[in-house]
Length: 177
Length: 180
Image 1 (tube, each protein chain N blue to C red):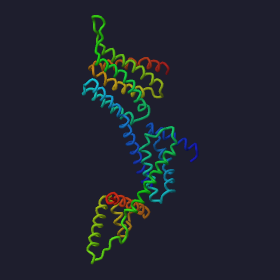
Image 2 (cartoon, rainbow over the protein chains, first blue to last red):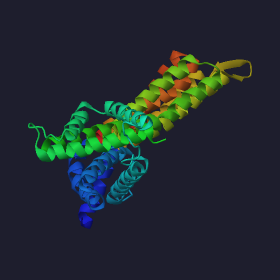
Image 3 (spheres, rainbow over the protein chains, first blue to last red):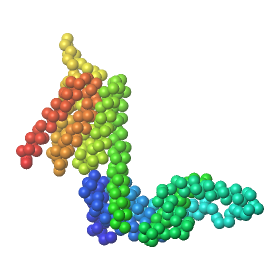
Image 4 (cartoon, helix red, strand yellow):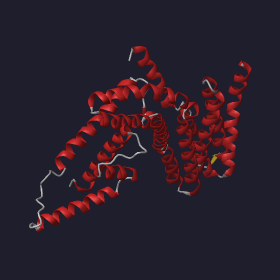
């Protein structure tokens, strides 16, 4: 972004902070590609889109507190950096607290293993119940190795990735401790 | 993709409005404190707190709206502190005695404070790009702030102060109209 555009963005952000809603669409159109590209460089595609969306929502949520003597682009990207860090931390945490394969042996002659497996299934069902119907459908279809006919493959892939992310989050929220 | 973008834009717009509202709610808290302090000072709860709450709501609405009306809230409240102080003084020392005769000072303080606030509000409005919006916003907040103090001396105190603000704004309004 060249310095003139950058300066213009700061002016527009200052107007938005002042309550001038007429510049909202322009600011949105200016920011989305910048934030999206910035997150795309730091994270894998699915996570990048989520991070960019969250960052953009936070930018507009805090727009009223923007100070006109600050550089808008630096301010926006610092919020994006924070979102990227949050997603990376979340991934690191879910790796630590996630259940490793074959952690619990589940053979018919091992009743303790069966009980533990049943508990995990029940826990998974409980976590699944916390998700939206759309996420549940996406996860069930993934489990059954199906692709819905009425949804484009790319859309379904994105939906599945987001559903998995939310499943991991819900799992961490409930069982991380 | 387009639908997703439009959905995200809608969410961003809502986030922006909620953010503004939260900012306005937090930024208006001092106006509640003004009402609380006056109530504690004059030991009367009802009117100062009712008017303080009205000032708070007006301030939240104006700050949320933003632009010139939002920027006029702080000066309006500050100018309104003049008639408010006058009203509180009138409540605590309601009369002045000279020799054998005593005079009630409440109307003097309320109207006097209102006139000074009105002059300041008029001056602020005449200097701004949108004088009508600034005048209405600053006068409303000054009136509500002043009314918190003037209510201690009754409804006539509030009316006197409102008349004072109106009178005070007249010279600036005339000057502004003449300039146009």
